[in-house]
Length: 176
Image (cartoon, rainbow, N blue to C red):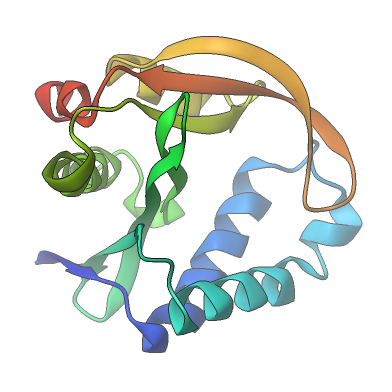
């Protein structure tokens, strides 16, 4: 049975592995193979240990658990940008759980959290331009692509990246 809960420090390793696996499955051809086949796990481990050891006051990380198995997670930062609003930094669902509604449920839960404290401002996220599945998912949830620009990637390269926006977190809740 699927359960949702907030992440804690003990979840850093599982989140890092799911994050790295998601990048390996979805970003091959955009990120360097050398990075995806090597340093990506350690890189994500460092990021998640830092985030969960000393979380920012505006950070929220929600996990979708299928028993003891991490099925997906979402991470957001409330009021992250004065112009764009709250930032959804990560949404990843494990390959075996994709197309099961977990991503939609995670988006609803993070949007509800954002509504509680940051309900009157917009929400945004970055998505690689060539990630058509993710782009379609966010469009179904009511986001619009406000711009595309070349952004640095964790492997040291660059890639065209879209900024998807919603007027408020309530707009996400209404579509989930």
